[in-house]
Amino acid sequence: MEVNVIVAGVGGQGVVTAGTLISQSALVKGHNVVMSEIHGLAQRGGSVSVEVRIGNIRSPIIPKGETDLILGIEPIEAVRAAENAGERTDVLINIGPVEPVSLSMRGKEYPDMRELVSEIVDRLDVHFIDALPLALEAGDARAVSTVMVGAALQLGILPIDEESTLEALKKRFSERLYTINEKALKLGMKNVLLALHEI
Image (cartoon, rainbow, N blue to C red; front, side):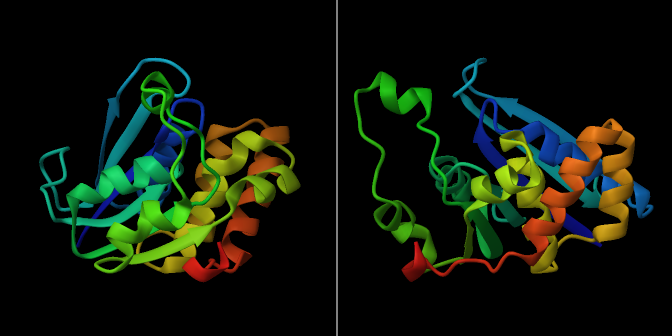
């Protein structure tokens, strides 16, 4: 078995947290895991991505075209990560944009969501979720990354489940934060993934 995941977003969105949660949950299930981080601008708003490789792997870097899931916490970063997608790649995109520093530095406006994703929806299996309202419902905007992991569980691609992910959450968070993230995970799992025409 081999499952390759790219988590992509911007600083402050919990990209590393999502990658760590997936990794720790896979370890709970007894899988071999390798995770690597790639940072752009080292500040809030800069590009951040994490690669998680689960299974019989040796290198921490996912070969081009062999990504199984792109977890896009920020839409522009999700589309950028899709450059590494193959024919079997699924993409899960949080439709709540955070304007990347690189965009504002060039004086450009955030693109229309449909136009942004149009280049990938025809060739990849793309799913959408509005994660921020669900994170706020759980009790903290920072739980967006946990909502995304919950939604990813619904896709059935990851070799982890709710039980292993909750155990990983217990190891990572204090009791209060665990309660928030447990709710965020379950809201992500139960939320219906949006179709493009619903955005």
